[in-house]
Image (cartoon, rainbow, N blue to C red; front, side, top):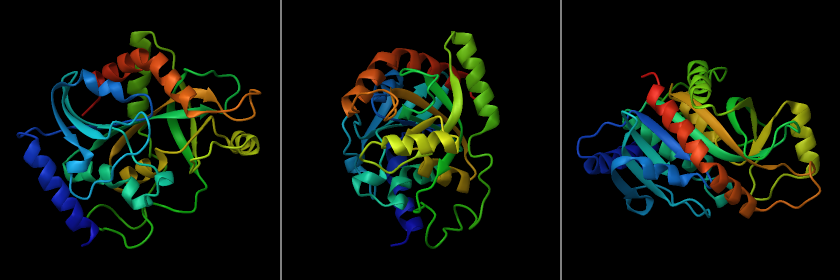
Length: 275
């Protein structure tokens, strides 16, 4: 069965559960940020286990379900938990949900993640609007035969993170009095945290944050012509900046500490999102 057949079956199943709703914005919630979905009105909840051909999230802090409903006047499809290359999934499997969103008619994508802070002038708990990314990982979600129905073989990446949406997010942050950073996110595959040398390299390369997600999804979204906004919650200073070991508990703890602020910002962005 080829990818388009699989996506067709996935789309058919999800649509059968949506009661006629047409999601306008897809939201991916990263580690420690999944409670944002609790704000969705009249939700339809679909466990990943029940969706044909869908991967299943294995990471602590990821509930592993779709939540579809109303949020600030928009209809959203929210992923509580994403898929990562380090879980053993292929890059193609990692981006399967984003491709599913496009099949459902969703043209807008809101990516969030928990990331390590590389910029030494920032601090844990800061929120960063992603302006661009760096991917030195050899594998790609578009490796192999191109599904022409989704997008062209070769495509532009200079507008992967929509400038109009970044401006929208900045205005939303100002309105709510929430300081935000703007910067570059660099992909590492994990599951080990980056070494101190890798973090120094990332800083020299121009990165402000490092993480293990988001980039494959942004690539797939660009391939399909989706409008994408990305926000990183900087949950810890990256390796080597502070003289202390890194752990996933710190990621979750910082996500918990800033989730209310993050929720306020996300809701205001969704409210003002240009469709």
